[in-house]
Amino acid sequence: MTTMKRKRHTPEQAVRKLREGEKRLNAGEELGSVLRQLEITESTWNRWRSTYGGMKAEQVKELKTLRVENARLKKLLAEAELDKAMLKDLAEGKLVTPDRRRAAVVRLRDRFGVSERRACAVVGQHRSTQRRPAAARADADAVYGQWLCVFAQAHPRWGWRKAHDVAVREERVVNAKRTLRLWRAHRLQRPPQRRHKRRRLGDGTAARLRAEHPNHVWALDFQFDETAARRRLKLLNVIDEFTREALAVHADHSIDADGVVAIVEAVAARRGAPAHLRMDNGPELTADALRDWCETSGTDTAYIEPGAPWENGWIESFNGRLRDECLNIEDFANLLEARVVLEDWRHDYNHHRPHRSLRGLTPAAYAASHRHENPTTQHP
Image 1 (cartoon, rainbow, N blue to C red):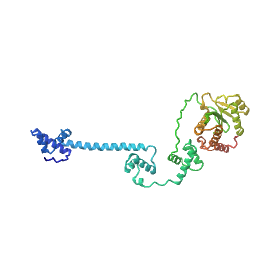
Image 2: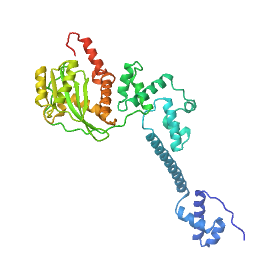
Image 3: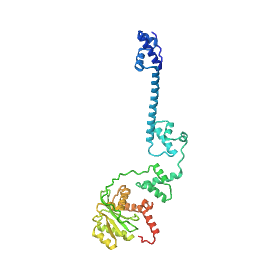
Image 4: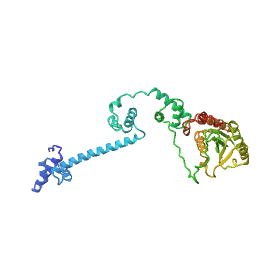
């Protein structure tokens, strides 16, 4: 028995043989005879009838063209989706330098398994640039970046703007963009914190008392914390609203009205008594002991409205900085340790921490600058 030679037919040839076979069948010939003359098997005949039945050669050619075009479009769509996924993966920052684009190409090749040519096309990097060895980081950037790392470790809650202000003060750098670039390159961004804003009640306080010179208005407020043994710590914070200096951060297990008087009197012994004391309506601050001291010292009291802490905004802002930069990251073993750490933080706040509302100066530097610019004004 001889086997039929296998022959691969194009769609056009299949349609032509299918039409020829149908003519022979219509003329009365047997199917077996027709298949032998066409040199195909019965299974091939049935498959062709189900695929190309009723079609002409031109229609088959058009169908073939559509299939090829459809396959090409599918490939383009898949490549576009892959490009979109790769670009989304690189959406963290702008690729403005060859080094960043070089690192992006390597990242895409590792994550998506694409070729270097494809990754370069997505990133916009020339292949010759990609193959050129990366230039060594400038020594100045390396030194400044190391300084930023040490700075961020010493001040974990300070951002890059504070770091830049300190660097400018120490004449390390001038360009803020360079500080931001290196800050991000070393991944020194501090973790974000959710802040729940309270709804403001009552009327505005635009007409309230404003500090016009040092020792004009002092602000007082209490804060609370605890030691590692869960003993309560009560802090009395005193600031000068004009210079933003932290005049006292006194910690104790309990502070009554006489304790408030003793703390304020100790500060006044160094700087002189203020013209006004701004504070809330707590029992320690409305007691007769503090009122008597104010009357003796010639100091007026400026109590805020009950339930309106925004009227004492400067001390509330200071409390937030103290909480964020010290109380939340320090674990006090006892009262003595708390007093030492808080006093060190107060000194650092006054002499090293730049304040953006004071033209980037520290509170102590701003106070000294004001004394120099206004020699005739009475200063503490």
